[in-house]
Image 1 (tube, rainbow over the protein chains, first blue to last red):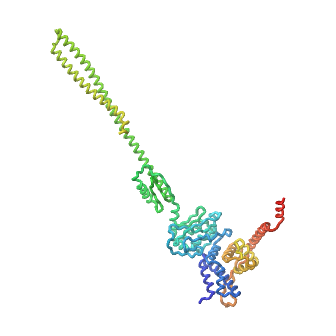
Image 2 (image 1 turned 90 degrees about the horizontal axis):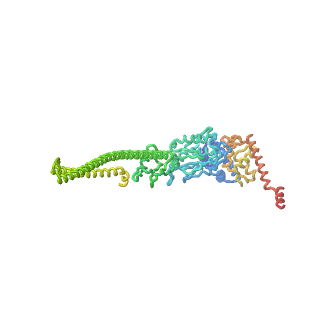
Image 3 (image 1 turned 30 degrees about the vertical axis):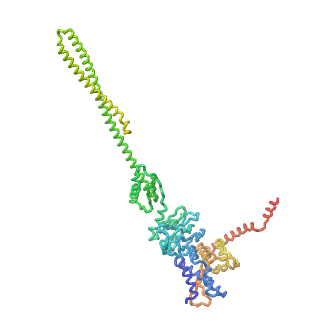
Length: 416
Length: 126
């Protein structure tokens, strides 16, 4: 059966294991607290208190073991005496079974735990002193999470745990780190981050806007996501809408991981939710597509203008040809008309001559039959001239109509 | 019993050490005794404070081996950490005492009967 004195050693073993200090300092703290406990027990024994009860009282008077271990550890790692001791009680555990203050982390995952990609550890600023001030650090073989807490405290920050992934924090809890020398807060955290080993690709830190954050890269990316809504280009048809979003996604995907990107076409708008760098890439791509579309539209307009000019030129030439023919026909009509009129005058002269021949034949006259033959021939000419004139006039009228139609055709094209 | 706040703890512990070197448990007993049991400095308050005082050079420390009464003279005893006020600690204590007195004087002006009160009353009466 173990002696009651051994129970003091057992409690000291527990407390010592909770101290985030180098071995030599742990032993010194253990010795000092052992002296305290045994001195107190001796006093209680003198007053007649039974030894087991005396030990129970002495241990109870020291307070909560984990809290005591943490305060003593902090006191050893704190450098600047002027800095206000932050309320360690701010540390809260978001995951059931997790006790940061006591470092009694239960690293086994529990049902309903948070998505590891969403886990965040933040330290809220509570100091007016700039983070770029240097501090002399002497953290040796301290669990990483506790070292983070201690470092934050040195610059007047307090750790505020919003949520924790038990796997990651469990590892950080048991991974000892060393941060020694004079350095800035950023340098200290960088030194910590380098030592996170298997989490190096998962974890990152941010000192931004007065807040230190130790968080997963996934969460860092997720929280940068912004949403932009822009009008769908007018040249996109309804059938092309889905294809437009998919095409942009496929192109951007060649260069970027699109785990936290969504490109959707909704009711004539393009909605892009993505980190800024991908947003910029999408925006640039959309602008280039828009520029290409505008160039295509300009080229189409130019092609239409060229086609129109060629068509107008052809029309103009056709009208010119028609006018030339019209002029020629009109001239011919006038000439034939003149010839017709002369022929009619000649016919009238022949008629007069025949009438004269009937009344009094002239000795030099070719004779009535010849004259009547001439008359008949002239009448035949007149008939042919009139046919020719009628034909030419019809042709001239047709040309006139064609010219009119050609000249004003562009006015009617839109109505067709 | 009152639990000492941190600002007062430093003044009290430095004052205790001004009377002579001491160690953790004895300091806590001394505080309780000198305050007639009104003050209590818990272990979670005292040991971090002593560490801070040591790191800032306000106290020096030494280790002593202590053996329980009746223990085997050949066996090793437990180790006791002694704290001694340094010169720097003495200056710090003097500053803290002066600050305390100034504060006390200011507070006395509010809580003790004084001519100022009578003047105020007469002023009101007038």
